[in-house]
Length: 495
Image (cartoon, rainbow, N blue to C red; front, top):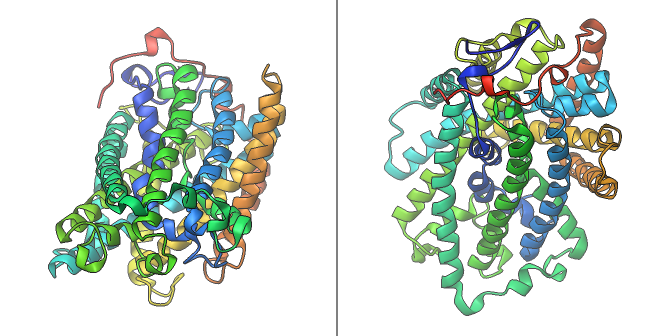
């Protein structure tokens, strides 16, 4: 059997699956996409492309470090919950446990819709990026943009059907290759900067043009770098020892990626000699500017820049797989609990969420078609439509996830009230509440149309979720039915 039934609750994985801490780490790091984030989001941290015009400036690494501390507080809450609840619902189950079923269901719908929209927006971004990069570098894109999108969707379909063991290994391979290459390059840049290095400048609040005000705005955007750190918890019921491995995976992923972000943000500002104007000229992708030939102000060559473009695409693929896996498990969990149509809770013969995965893929196809034929939707001036779609989707997803982190932090005060570490609970909850409120504020402050419609849409989904609790009252969540995998359920990993 590829699944175990508890009553009519179908369990993912079952006797055909045994995931380890490596798989869990791969899911969290793959979702965060550290190379993709550091390649494109440093200008937002610095403040040279944000709507507010505020950011950490040359002290962006300090903003990242403070954001990492805040996310670690959220990670501690998730780690405590994973010792209590092991089910595919992840944050949906945590909010339900702390704040009750109605807020839990509304949060779950918002959370997984946020991940789904983020995933499909990323899909068209990758296809468009591959198309335009090939065209720019070689004068030929080989395939139309929409065909690249459809190829990516087909690859994603295969990964989702064949099972999470394959997806986490694909994520791990893609992420390790991209992170290793870029980390080596960042260290090379720091060495080449030589005597112009100034660690004190990077961690001094006065290095921001707006001082602490700018640093804190950098923190708002810094939190977004860690979006998805908790998604290894979605694999809890498929993991051999979730009470031990998932908490470790969550906290390790945050710390490891935080180290990468601090080094990467420092190498970027130092590589441009702490000159914000020079960095601003490469605001589209500072990493590619640093990797370019010396004649263009870089530290590499055309070949090295192309290598960086390749590894960024590889990391984007890891993020795509991670978001799709998380979304499919979330909709599966809500269907299994009868909070959404129960058909979403069906499991394939391979122990994967069959209908929920099909729904994710169908939504991806819809976004591909919309991107192709409805070119006015969310359009931004002088921006490819696929990029405009992604910017809107990432704003929606970022606001949705920040909202759920906020509700989880509040609910933890009740849901984890029996912990012997009461002082740590209060500290983590307060830090989590403050930093997620700040991230939500950063998602709407001075944001203009059409991007500002994304947070409004997210709030609309939340209201729909509340309404669903009256239409579909559901049943006890599966987290109350499943514990850690028993020995009989721990079979060999099957791809």
